[in-house]
Amino acid sequence: MSLPSRITINEEGPREGFQIEPGPIPTADKIALVDALSETGLTHIQVCSFVNPKKVPGMADADAIACGIKRKPGVQYTGLWLNEKGLDRAIANGCLDIIGKMSLTVSVEFLRQNQNVTHEENLALMRRLRDAYIDRNIPIDRVMVMSAFGCNFQGDVSPDDVLARVADLVEMAAERDMAIPMLSLADTMGWATPERIKRMLGAVRDRYPDLPLNLHLHDTRGLGIANAYAGLEMGVANFDTSVAGLGGCPFAGHKGAAGNVCTEDLVFMCEEMGIETGVDLDKLLDAALLAERIVGHPLPGMVKRGGSLSAKRKEIAA
Image (cartoon, rainbow, N blue to C red):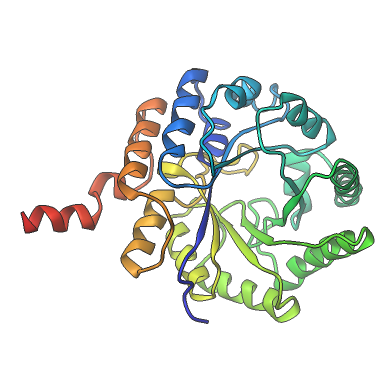
């Protein structure tokens, strides 16, 4: 497929990162990072998660984060939840855009580690969430298959495994005449390679050619940007990213698990390839450096260290 002319970036660094940093990180610093990201041209920022604070203490201040940010027109601010209780908390908070998602997981062992439920229990939970969204007129922007490229607990997964979960989600939506705006494939534990990306996307496209795709890529083994490039080559135009490479799943079974592919590195690559992102790279680099100062240790993003080529070209020209 030809490369997309423009991509959409969903920034997840504040939620993805601050859920795993040992901290404690002051709430004001978390808010400051969201506010800095709001000035970059990003149109979607996931700011927090409404989950059990005993299991994810870094999100114990989710309500304060959500209500402390300075909302910028044109930016969608969202949260994450895993069940109806989390959804109820997000709605009661009243400060975020409530956008529904439904997710299933290929790896039953990761599902147990992450949510302490079986596949059958998760199916029932997603049906309840689906009904809650419909009953409350909450829009759904995607369905997601987690551990879609491999699992630290169960090993490799096949395209058939992934297609089975996609079929479950498609059936679930059809039961209530619900449209699926987008399917997200998540490399939750960093098992993807460019070849696996292309094979899995090809299998999904063969079965569901009209379903728009998103990639949620983790950089656990250093292939995040290479996998994003493979997705671009397959025509994917929607990506989840994390500023400075913040984050990681606390239940992924990998010490030091990395967050999503780094936002500024993806923006830089696309900028150099002539693919529009709508993001101001200079402002994004400032936000990445702020994220690093907040956590107090080096973060994996590369362009914040090396700088953009546009800045270097201006320096040379001067």
